[in-house]
Amino acid sequence: MKSRLPLLLISVSALTACASVPDPIPGMAPNPTAADNHRIEVTQTAQRMEVPVAPGDVALSSAARAQLHAFANNYLRYGHGALVLSTPSGAGNSDAASIVANETRMSLVEAGVSYAAVAGSSYDASGDAASPIIVSFSRYEAQAPECAPLWEQDLAHQSNNQPWESFGCATVSNLAAMIEDPADLLHPRAQDPRDGARRTTVMDAYRAGEQTHAERTADERVSISNAVQ
Image (cartoon, rainbow, N blue to C red; front, side, top):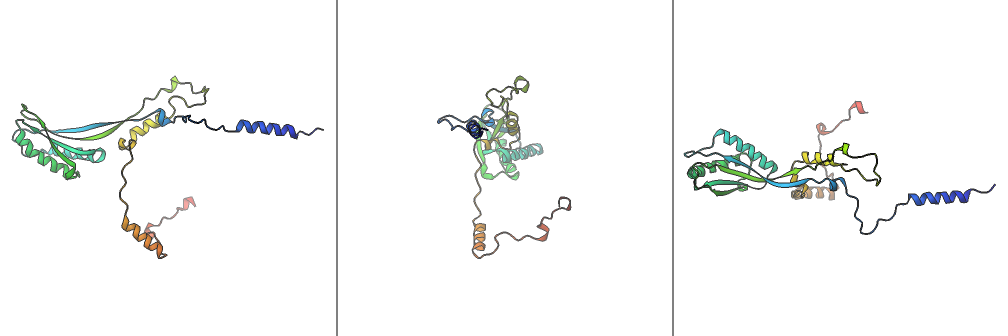
């Protein structure tokens, strides 16, 4: 009986050649990802609020104060840059607006906005009998990509072995709807400074051969439930 070893070696060599991964072609760009095919558009916009001021007003109304507190919360959550407070100039209520503008600033500070973050400004309101005080700030909004309907695509026949047109689009759309601040898609947030004092304490304990973690009480220890033992 003739040996089948040469035939077996040829077959294994052929399979190995088929399974080998070719080297990438220099200069060829990698296949685009779902994030590349379905981009989230981030635009900068302005959020503003008008505080009505009638001639002779010397204080904010309770409704305006409540609206300012809600506006300040939005600034602390989504705002970028200064919160601009613009008072009318040349209007019939300019004197009253100057008085109410100071209360408007203090109301924003009471809501948590830094006094230095409120930038004063004015706008030309000549000829108006009663112009409002305008507060505004810049924020970012995310626009989700348009996803092609699945019923318009043939998911069973992909001759080039590439994802279909809307592959990953729903995930990207959900991200655009859930992200807290769309500015995070443009650049990372600044890091807080390190705690130098805590680092020194840990290094001193390490050099002395002592434990470097904080002491834990019995109430802080976690016990495993009998149900998972």
